[in-house]
Amino acid sequence: MSLLRDQYPWMTAGDTTYLNAASTGPHPARAVARGEQWLALRAEPHRISIPHMVDAAQHAREHFAAMIGADSTEIALMPNTTYGLNLAARGLPLRPGTILTFDGEFPSCVYPFMALASRGVGLERVPANEAGLPDEDELVRRIGRGDVVAVVVSWVQYASGFVVDLARIGAACRAAGAFFVVDGIQGCGVRPIDVHALGVDVFASGAQKWMLSPWGTGFVYVREELHDVVQAPDVGWACMTASADYAWLTNYEYEFLPDARRFEVVTLAYHDFGVAVEALACMRDAGGPAAIGEHMATLGDRIVEWAQGRDDVRLWTPAERERRAGVIALVPQDLDGAMRRLKAAGVVCVPREGAVRLAPHAYNTMEDVERALDALGG
Ligand SMILES: Cc1ncc(COP(=O)(O)O)c(C=O)c1O
Image (cartoon, rainbow, N blue to C red):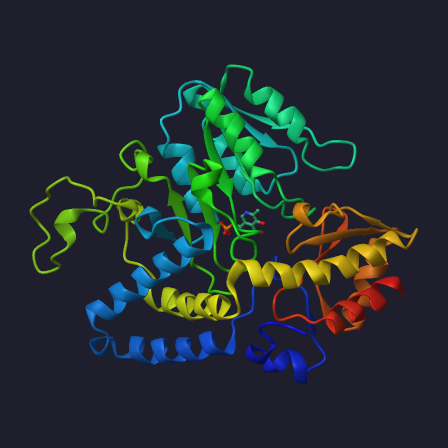
């Protein structure tokens, strides 16, 4: 059983078992067809009306908002995750103090915040626990220390697949008056989330992985109350109210758009967002994050059960469903040998931080998982 397999005829016809959505999500056939239409139009730009472009962008904002429980007015389209994290790093009014993150985070949660040292804002990495996973107890303890101005974490850790308890960290941030910034890319689209309820201030995600969309598409959510508070480090023309009339752009009235579009600085990749809209519609039609997440959890259960029954493989991802999403990380005794066997069997996955990272999605079947486990087991 799978939810989206009909959109991927090459997966059924060929010898490839694709378990690598945590790196790059493959486009559904519907999105590919939509992309061909957009490219044909883009070749003759006079055939694309401005409302067609504006609608593609707006539909993308609406889909992203629906994925995370936000209002579309709180969504700014971005080319990736890192831009949104930079908006938080450089745009939030951070007084001198400490930003906390986990050691082992993806570098986009680290470098943009390390870059604030000259402003007297230091980044502190909380060491992992003995299982090599984020130490939430220690993070929460440090948030209460008094000097913490912000916390930045990935919702789902890119290598271990550990799902962070955003509710707990969000509550600690609120109690301490610290901003809460989340890198959502490894969970967004395949697990339900309500950013309002969790007290997230900024949530950034590219759409190129689990949201099956083109490179160069993504978004940042900025909580409505912060729209006037975040000082956009980049300013352009597209973010201004005065730019609504393309025929008359030079009155230079310095007034930002009233919603999160104020953070969209430049001409957007309309055709790519058009493809993203189709991919996101496909995911919605398959039942959205709840149904997709349930399917993936079932595939994950099998990997967990398999790994727990062996002594030559360590399960790095937590076994409990609520602590894992799409990434299941397994540490074999012989990583290189395991990767060679997987490749020889046509299984596409990658090694990360000493582990094999399996990343099945809605289009994968239990047979796909068994093929990977057979290869892994040798
Ligand atoms: C947690 C996390 N953040 C960010 C990224 C990628 O960032 P961007 O979308 O800016 O390329 C990745 C990609 O591997 C990731 O795993």
